[in-house]
Amino acid sequence: GSVKLSDQAAITGNTAGEHFNGAGIFNDGGSVTMEDAASIDANVVEGGAGGGIYGVGGSIELGGHAVVAANAADLGGRAGGIYNGGGSVTLKGSASVRGNFAYVWVAGGILNAGGTVTLHDSSSVADNQADFDGGISNASGSVTLNDEATISGNSGFYVAGGVSNSSAGLVTVNDHATIRDDVVAAAMGVVDS
Image (tube, rainbow, N blue to C red; front, side, top):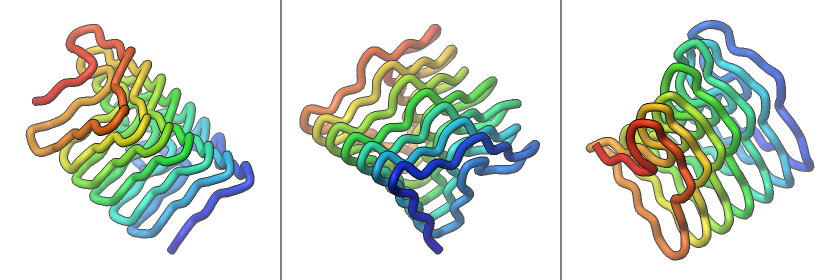
């Protein structure tokens, strides 16, 4: 199936109970499209994954100033913003994943597990926070930044403010894309392990 959010549509203020996934959207092999300043914000998973969006397979596409913002993975959950398990996540236009949190665990912005994450145009992953991997945690699969895309202002308390890349992953930065101004207490902006 497919979900399309446009014309400033919003999914906001939802909670997925303990160990459930996808407080905003749970996408199992379908497609999620956000455009025209649509938003997914202020949703919370308690011990699960994907405060904003949880995806297994399928595709997630944000364009046209769409935003996934201020979502949280609480109680040891993963991926405050987007969890991508084997699917594709694409940000284009001026879309952003920003201001999301993962308390006590990993990936404030995006957790990529065996899929692809691609940022185009002036899209961004910014101002996300987690104990481990504030911006993007690339457990496996690929992360690609093109054009003037940015990963910036993210913070991780222990590891990787900007991007953490495991031995099974690949991170590519092309064109004028940047990873900058990320903060971490115990490591650096980009960690490749």
